[in-house]
Length: 196
Image 1 (tube, one colour):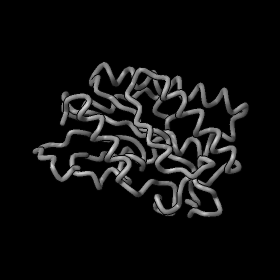
Image 2 (cartoon, one colour):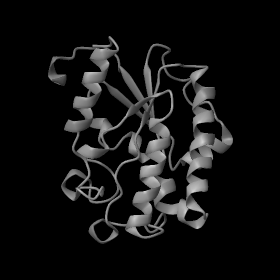
Image 3 (tube, one colour):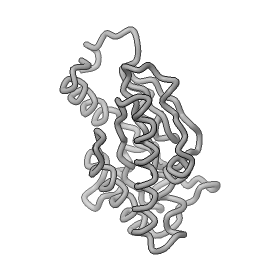
Image 4 (cartoon, one colour):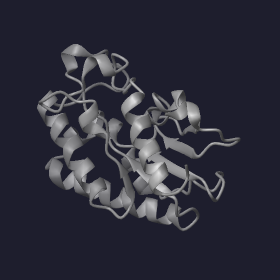
């Protein structure tokens, strides 16, 4: 479908952790802008404006939360309260950014891989069991889905029947790799909002 899109500028700008460029960089009308190892927690705590460098008419997609679910939430029990607090603060930070550019979309946290089936980043290791990390991801995504922002929910396109990352659709680590489901979702939504 994207082969028919002719545009002289990006339609979408992504910002966030590494999940804002993995897979996204293969979609021609997307400009990826990583903020490094940002976390949903730190973004919500600092309330930093990150959308002011993008064109006012652009769609900004914020991609955060996977690092929180993989590395940190398990350390702060009860985890349900931790997830809800992180999500609340994150959405407050998004609200501040939306005052600068109201065209903000939120990217779902991608399915967690089974630890035994994926490469592990030793500086940001898996903390908690596979099932615990899956619970964190599901609860964060539910909180984002309940927000007023467009929620890019392609989770089911990348997970197995139990909710874990399908290895063949990943980069053998924690990122989605197969661009087709993401691109199809984006192009359907871009048509809905009159950008295509």
